[in-house]
Amino acid sequence: MHKICVIPGDGIGKEVVPATVKILEAVGDFEFVYAEAGDEVYKKTGKALPEETVEKCLECEAVLFGAAGETAADVIVKLRHILDTYANVRPVKAYKGVKCLRDDIDYVIVRENTEGLYKGIEAKIDEGITIATRVITEKACERIFRFAFELARDRKKQGKEGKVTCAHKANVLKITDGLFKDVFYKIAKEYPDIKAEDYYIDAMNMYIITKPQTFDVVVTSNLFGDILSDGAAGTVGGLGLAPSANIGDEHGLFEPVHGSAPDIAGKGIANPTATILSAVLMLRYLNEHEMANKIEKALEEVLAEGLTTPDLGGNLKTFEMAEEIIKRLEHD
Ligand code: NAI
Ligand code: MG
Image (cartoon, rainbow, N blue to C red):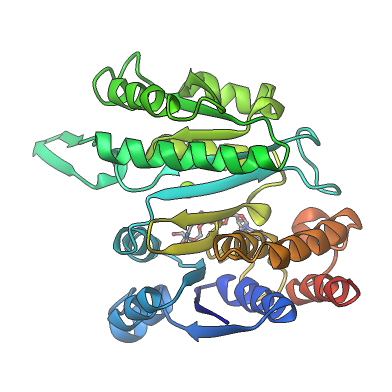
């Protein structure tokens, strides 16, 4: 039995996470340890990420997180740091029944999660003059590239091409991205069975629109990955469908890419797909591939039949969509 820390958080997190927990309960035995984080607990206690929550995250095998509101940076960025989840994994996949740019899109963006411009080193050095420091270290590059090549190797076993594409801006950021690119090709030599290629991030931003079907695993630095992955999500149906995994050597945290969506929170119409797919990533991380495949297959059927929430053109509520998935799990 797996022990999972569940943090619904704020807004639609309170809707999509319970729907996902029901689906998990339909495929296996889990011990769910509930914890609080976000705006609501901040208002109650003055802490967006209580100590207790951190302890629960540390003692569980994985964390399933919904969304935080305005306190997101104090919650999720901090948690990624504490858990040292250095790889942010964001699959970009076209599902049948969902309006996508093409129907053969299936790649994964791996974003370095601990440094780059998000290291948080900013300063005001004079009136009207501010700076931010971009940190790129060989050590962090090596582990994120190894992670990307290992992932490409796993995917190759499932019939994918076996290719890693590195996106950077080494022509302008000569020192930091110069190192990033050099380390990429150094690590690539450890994986002769996997192809390696690189593009400048600005061109890459075009290629995810003009030739997304050619990518397998894309690896990039923190800020570039943040921007690229939201754009990529837009090519396969948008935020309601975009899952993510934060993975380190000791911990894994799984969350939809979207936030608390205050504009639709409380209406029961949030799309649970991004959170369900995040749970699928969590099951794969826990080596529960059979459970993961079962849920993904049931979800694929429901999407293909148009049994969705309003954001995808359907008329189901969050829980009704989850129930459609559970029905298909039981009939399996
Ligand atoms: P958002 O992702 O919450 O919403 C953007 C738009 O997408 C909204 O129109 C929303 O209704 C729609 N949307 C998002 N998820 C959806 C779903 N599952 N089904 C249907 N429609 C969905 O981003 P926004 O509006 O920029 O931020 C709202 C709050 O969320 C802010 O307080 C922000 O700080 C927080 N946030 C938290 C994140 C996290 O916890 N990881 C990430 C991004 C934002
Ligand atoms: Mg983002």
